[in-house]
Image (cartoon, rainbow, N blue to C red; front, top):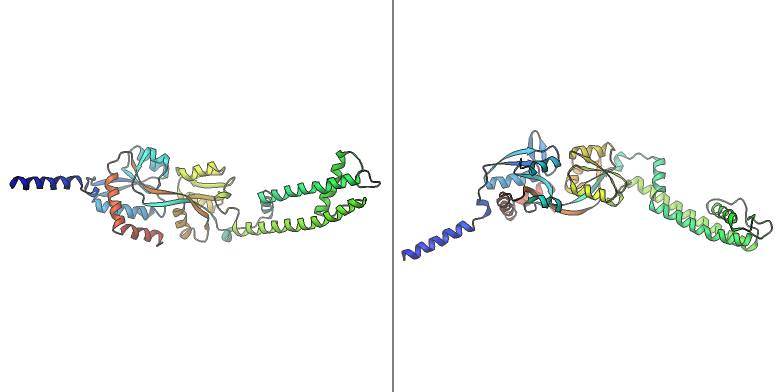
Length: 363
């Protein structure tokens, strides 16, 4: 009987040892936590740190019974350098998980899902009309070039008809029977009739019928083209030249140094990338018109647009390329498992939802 009791006790002890939750694993009494300012994830006010990521981490730290020594990096790239050379134990901020980072670092369970979004200056607050720039912008749009191409093509039809009918007609508007330069005279007449009023009218009877029909076509074409230009100019003044990521090619776009996702996207879509060391510098460059737009994770932009940038900036287009964000660790870090265990517990007891709603509101 004694042997049986001892065997049962041994089984219980072994079970306790091997299935103890990750929260009970040994964690140093003090951890070096790297971070970089990126509202609303990390906010520095009066020498203290707060924000979504900070609140979440401090809840984890309380459950792991450890204290924190925050080491604030001046920029994103410097934060990853500190992690790479193990000057910090891990990073707490808005760290999006990418294939490139995953090859070099380990990550916790996801704390948030975030995509990229475009932010521009608020046209209603700062737009000053510039007729010359508006005209140049309209002339270089795909729609305008398409209209001009259609005009060039349809002008060829009446030009060739008039050349064929007028080239041998006495006192006709085509002075030569040769195709060149005769067709150039016909094209000049066709363009003048389309846009304004030709100086001379065809003399041959059938050519006059062609001219009569072409004048009506010209009136309709010019009316439609004018309406299209007016609509484009109105939209341009109301909404601005950038209305989403599809409008970024060729534009000067700001982002933060070390933010690989927006940098790679902009370079891959032929935008002119301007990198800034800090998020605040990127926002200020947008307000100072040093860049036409910024591309960065949507939660950061939404927070700025609702607080410091309220009435000065606005988000355009939809959020795209959504990725998970988490805490970043050196590869093989023993801290990853206990911290993941705490994150799971925080989600299960509703603490995560309370922290999330504090910073992002309820959904």
